[in-house]
Amino acid sequence: MNTVDVKGWGGILNIMRNGIRYKAIDSTLEQITAIMRRDICHFQLHYTNYQFGVSQKHKALKDAFTKKVDCTERLESFINFVENGMSVLFGDIAGNTRNYFDTTRHHDTPPRVTIYLVDENNRLVDLVMIPKPSESVPDDKLCIDNFTSLTTVLGEGIPYLVNSIPAEIMDDDSYFHPEFDVDRIRRSYTKLFSDRKPISILRNNYLKPFIDRNWNQMKIGNDITINLHKSHLVVPITYRAHLDKNSLNKEMVRLLKLDGNGRSILGFICVDHMSTYYFNDHSVQSYKNIDINILYVYADLLSLIIVTYLTYTVGSSTYTECMQTKGEIK
Amino acid sequence: MIKAKLASAELEKKMDKTANNYIVKFSSESLRRIRTYSNVRNSDGWQANMKNNANRLSD
Image (cartoon, rainbow over all chains, first blue to last red; front, side, top):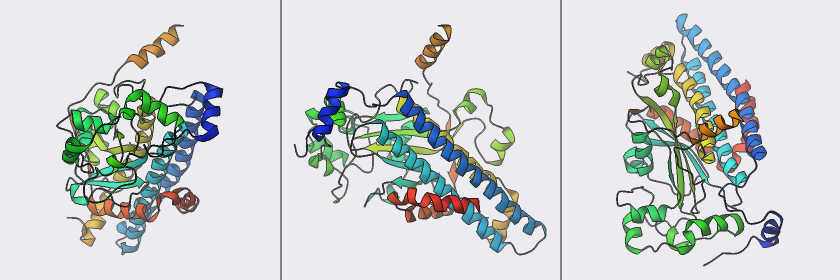
């Protein structure tokens, strides 16, 4: 036990005022809907500017291409705008996601939020990671097949939630994740009594964060991380209704090279936290899981940015031909 | 009362698992550049950068 301590008089007053709360999320309906209203309003403004800006840059590119004048400068300007804007909007949503978790619970440390997309070589790319750790998973390990969480999401099409990674690794022989030395954990780590659900939730709500130094040494490699995560949640960025009703525009599905027969997963939004039972514990398939409901909203906003990006790049004959002329794509 | 019951029934529904899922793949060059943009803005700088970004996106 290192830094276990009640959060000063504030924590005690909190208990006296509100009684003991036994839930991962401690927020009112007003607070949660206010967060969503503010974040969607913010997104509405910046996405509108992005979408309009991309269409204008694309129009300028198309004009030059049609008139057969050199379009190098306009192509660079277009690519810079569409990619830089995507990075900005992704960062905003990752920041908003982090803020949602930070605001709706009492833990002193906010979670890490990562947005992953996959490239043509089947490699995962962490487009945004907040906060960025000093040392993350090596690039050669970044592949869906190396993560139980991502293979499960891809295989079953539902979110993935583990509220106690130490217990999951020790109880499930098939669990793998490139950040954890799973063999060493199974061999030498002892699960903490205080990581059980009731104690975890009370600790997260009322005590200062507990640093588990033994757990922090279980990261793969020699690096001892400050806060190796103990719980994580992954939600796919996807069009779920498309699969149920086959209602995504067929021409768009063809143009963007999506799979008309299956469900296209555009990427993943992942949230990791250093504490056990940080997330709402309802089934990932249930609408009662508030964290997953909220993460799906952010994932759906991300899908709009991605589809705009795809529409004006791989979905655009002007862009494709300009890139072919430059020799950037075949 | 009926509405409340309907809303409650909606909450009890569960998402079904789906087998036919397909991952969309993106240009590695493009993702590399986007990631570089993201890394340039450090985690604490996102909010501070937003105003500038908003102006830039409005250009």
